[in-house]
Length: 61
Image (cartoon, rainbow, N blue to C red; front, side, top):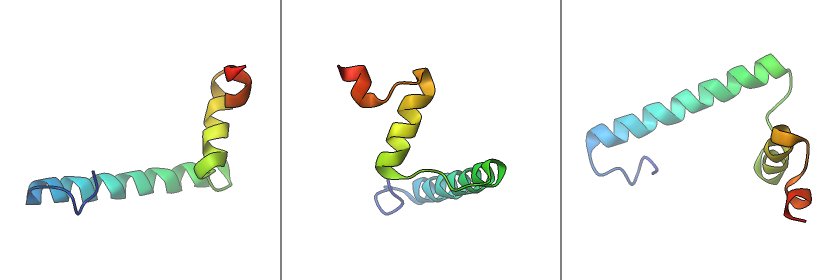
């Protein structure tokens, strides 16, 4: 749910807080890794490979 779709003011505050926390966590992770996190399709492949070393395409074969 996005901040605009939250039905109440408490929901909007919670959604905004969650977005800010996620952004802080991403910045911290990027700083620890020394490089930016992969985004979009590259992130999907990176996360898929991290579990067992195979890409998503290899798993479907």
